[in-house]
Length: 493
Image 1 (spheres, one colour):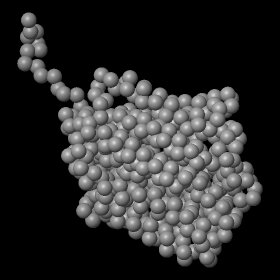
Image 2 (image 1 turned 60 degrees about the vertical axis):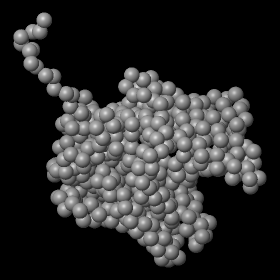
Image 3 (image 1 turned 120 degrees about the vertical axis):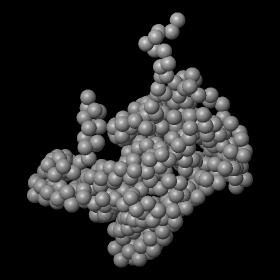
Image 4 (image 1 turned 90 degrees about the vertical axis):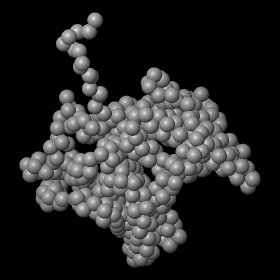
């Protein structure tokens, strides 16, 4: 019997989290989780890598690194921006189409990875490379295969903004990787078992993902060639842009080896390695908000403009803080990472640290363009940045050596940020960033920097002190977006 009070009542469909008011706070908290997981994974790597290097020795560790470098190239070629495009498509498609997209991406990436790993192994066999390296390529290739399947099936968690889950799985994978390496060192294992570490760690992550997914998604990949062609047509310009982006960011390192002394190349490389690690943080933060931007690009352009504006303000605030902290703590960072013989790297790091401001901005605008499917604009901007990196390196390195390469890479980063925002505004004038936050951040930076300059404390303490002053001034000037403060309060609770 039907209750008269409920007769005719139709239950409202559940609201997608991307369309809810909780989306922004969830993305902010998720970004914090992702950066935290990134830091934990770096620390775990520091626990595992030194014992492995000492255990394997120079020759075997060289084989390990060589095989790993080949698989890193394979991963770059087969990934080709597909994860980002899969995220966008999953966020923009209707519920009924999402599963088909996911399964086709898995099928496509499996086929591409198997083919590319096989080609790499055959090529190294043909040139007479060591059997250990060829075996390493095959084993690490299998691990990559497991890893990309696990990563692709995590897309729904990312779109649902369940970033605490994905962050925890990242840490779980690194814990398994670290524990396995330490165990192999303890038992005195030979080189070959170390190649299986990636597969073991990725297998654990995939097993947990399957357990969480089994009632929600069919995990069978789909091999629909027609869908693959359509996906690749959409993805190829972005894949080319991603490839050019990898090259421009590392152009100065490569060119330094050709036009500068080995010593100057070493000075630049040690600073570059630190900046390379720090430069991953903006992308982790912005990627957390990408599903929201993708949905807004489909349904609500006003919301897209609002989201990009808030991300711009946050990027300016956090990017300037990271650049300032890098400048103040450069001596300590170089001393820890490279040692006392790399003092000239301090100035190099300070110059490169300024590029972190641009990295925060360009990551925001890159995902804005990707949400709007402006792949060719991204490609053109990256090509321009590559040209600036090459030209400036040749211009400045002969004049000021390693510092010249730092100037070149920083100029390229700001060029890319400028090109991205121009591309955004060409089609959408409403996406022009408002600069009201900039003078407030400038005031906070000047005051924090002045306090650090006149205070006789160790560098680490100065970084902490300048951070407190910087945050206090920004709060006093009401420069921090209210959404960011609310989300962080929620995280604390």
